[in-house]
Image (cartoon, rainbow, N blue to C red; front, side):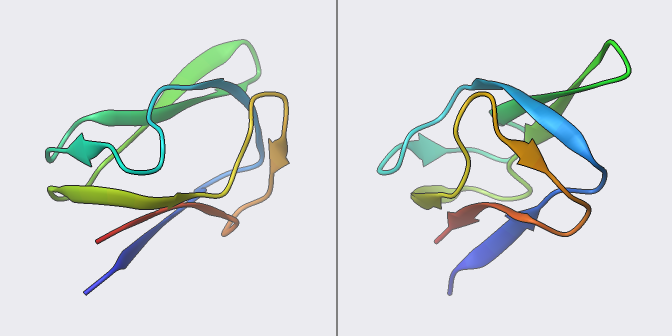
Length: 71
């Protein structure tokens, strides 16, 4: 079953670390967001394979926006 990772705040996508097809473990960094000069890592909440990465570097995400799908 696929699980969605969503943004928890308004932020800029500073760096995309993972790619679609990557195997990830719980706690692995998927992307790094930047808000108010702070870097906020978005991590996998469980292990699986990144099925979709819905953001690119430079994007602005809003609270609740889809970042990734892990299955």
